[in-house]
Image 1 (cartoon, one colour):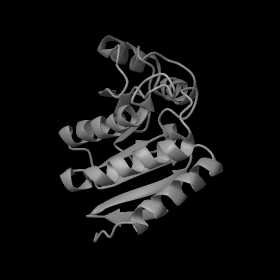
Image 2 (cartoon, helix red, strand yellow; image 1 turned 90 degrees about the vertical axis):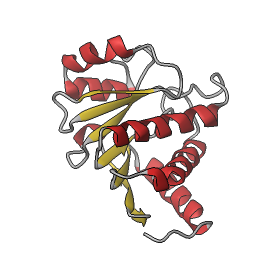
Image 3 (cartoon, rainbow, N blue to C red; image 1 turned 180 degrees about the vertical axis):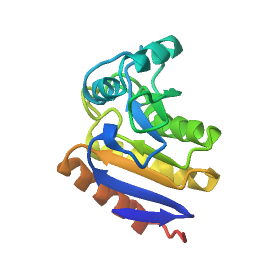
Length: 183
């Protein structure tokens, strides 16, 4: 599913975040110390190779909502933007911290003049954020920042499961039905 808003394409796709050849940067749902971990972080670190951890670790630790950028090494991208999402039920206020992840990642992409970025569903794995709530925060935050974007032309959400993709599609449609955008 693709939707164009103010000249920026938002795309939802099912897939593997480590195989997004058409994106300049991929976003890592990182842990605070920016080390190899499980889930998205483990997959990205494994695909990028050991150099990713060597470059990333000195940039940590991160607080929930913060983001940093590194090279992508053996990934098919130029950069990895590492975001520490909130642990649901622990890090408060969850929605604000999750929104900060997306906002800060977009700011780094703009600062580096990137034309495209791919996001996973940050905090929805082991951090326990309910997928519908997380999708609403992610999509609302990105749409809210679109008028500030100058360089990004493609923002992709890469969802690992068909169920997550369906949730994101539903939330995107609900949000867009409540607003009118001319692309």
